[in-house]
Length: 178
Image 1 (cartoon, rainbow, N blue to C red):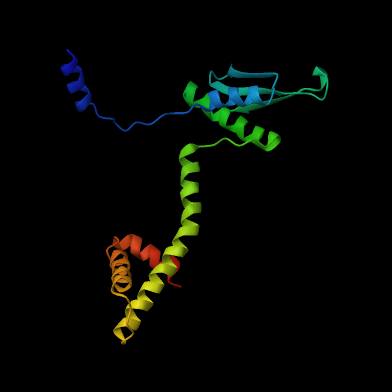
Image 2 (image 1 turned 120 degrees about the vertical axis):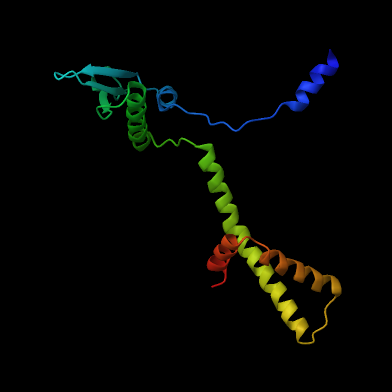
């Protein structure tokens, strides 16, 4: 029995999947964090029979309930109910971000921004390394003698750059060879 369980684990593979994050759920969390007294989904049927979906948000007043303020966010007509609520919740989140100054992190975008920031610091350093390697190789070709390990490293670095796919190499050249 134990052997067959181990065998099944070997054949298990992870599959790529996407996770949908609901703006309605995020809005509920934001409402809790911002101490909003009330949020609600709204469904109204117009005279022509068209369904209208939206979100109602009550903002806290300054010390008493009489000063509270309600905001309404409506989705475009013709959207399916769940999509309409998501669209209205996104509008509410944008408005609440302006008012309360919070940030909702999208971890995919956050990771890309981190990689971009790292690239902005690391690529210029790599560029200077390639320039130095080319200087060593060119001066070696003109008779300057270098340690063989230094010359070999310089040649490897320049060869590694030339082995980059052409699109990445062109992007590199465009950005850093000016």
